[in-house]
Image 1 (cartoon, helix red, strand yellow):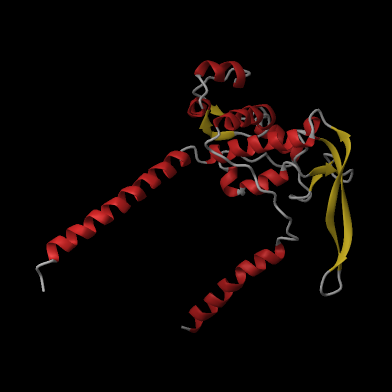
Image 2 (image 1 turned 90 degrees about the vertical axis):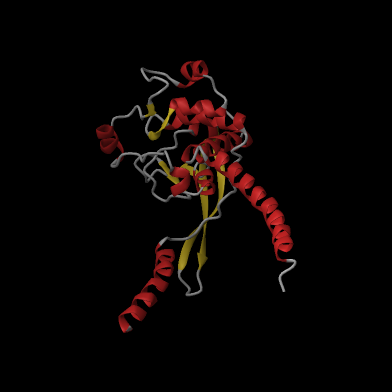
Length: 247
């Protein structure tokens, strides 16, 4: 019994320890996820193929599944397939696994379910938080992921920004650097609002790709709840009718 109490005490402090080791938290921006917006999902799929699929695979997703977004097989072939892939193939990265380990120190993760392992709000914030850092091997760092190994692959769109930090003291008097703001030092090919919209489409697609059946599942769930609500009323009056003569 004493051992069980000690175990429960240990488990109670595990989340606190994890939070303490996670570093300073950042404010996450709300991702514009709307799985019913097929135009956004189609734009996001194009962003994914053009900017993510060079390094990251999505090995649990087939190109043919994009037909669920309203794309025809010909549209997929003409706009989303660039080499020898076929519509029925899975989305595999153009970069070789061995090359990725040499160039980045570790192979880029598969993005099939990244929106489930990482919250869409985190991904949306992350993709908009790259800044120039000459101390990093790639020349880039990220507010949401400190010392990130990934370069800013969409820098031509967003441009280059630097991060400003301010020194603050905690309640124990220790001094820390806290992120203050970004400053755009080299404009990209699109405005900041346009870039945010493009990243929003990409994150929307990643959220859909992580669970393509979610919209249908939610629709089915609502139908089941509606049926149960109607059936409850019928069952209630049937119960009253059956038991009205029972005392």
